Length: 399
Ligand SMILES: [Fe+2]
Ligand SMILES: [Fe+2]
Image (cartoon, rainbow, N blue to C red):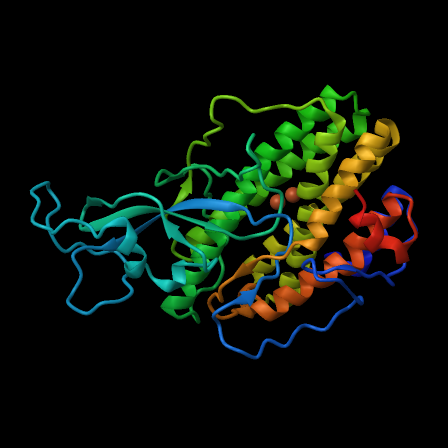
């Protein structure tokens, strides 16, 4: 059982004591209002620039390690796999690894799950492979934002600390490309779930800093434990699809800023929780609808339920902050919702859907997230601010 978007709206509405209809319009990508339930814009066209789904919050960035066999046979193109060719043992028989700017050409497209990947280090040669750090931005959920508002994730490692090898998916019907794509997707999600642990750790401290009631503090800690479970499950799935990367150390830059300013905390709770986790809950729920593989289905259902509860915590926390924080909080919350609902991001097309394993098409994902913004987040935001649903646009635009 997992919550549908409508059920989630009901749960969240009652959690913050707001009655929600769904006749709301609000700005789409800064270009004026649009009716609710807007059609997907059919984008029959080609792949160059498909508007992504994710909208807001800003896509989480994550880093991972990618390797390809080196040197390669004469044909260009996507590498993959392992398999040593030349010079292990140290003597440099292999030619130097390709420079950073060219390395992405050798990384299999199936490993580029966001479509905006870039290589951020020079290559290191070992055991017949060239390895690089690859970064990308995509995904919804609760990111961990550093002092500069940038998302952070753990460094990748080869040592196994988060995987457990419990019940994997059935990979027998998958092509090599599909398997690799699924490994990349679950690896990305695993790193983002892992970062959410830190996000809740800080949120719990900030709730303490501003004298929040016990139930909010308690739930923030419980949510961090949920994220530990999500990270483990995602690393397990990634490994079952053939991935070899695990979570290593997380660089906090020496200090984690813990704010005691209600407007700042409320703003982040809106972006990370009310928006990020509401979208994550709805997306996981839709993915679970599509999935038929039992291991994937179980994980998506778990995540959908937990993210719905985390979203509820965020909405309740923001409601409490509005109650005690007065006008400065109200202004910060209004701005944050406005930014969240008016922003849309573009990414290039990704690999094909694999519905049995919970991967939707770009078009489906876009529709799901768009509707969640229009039919859940916007009316709840208006209700939270004490404004009529029909004024959601103006409400979120104020300030
Ligand atoms: Fe999560
Ligand atoms: Fe979460």
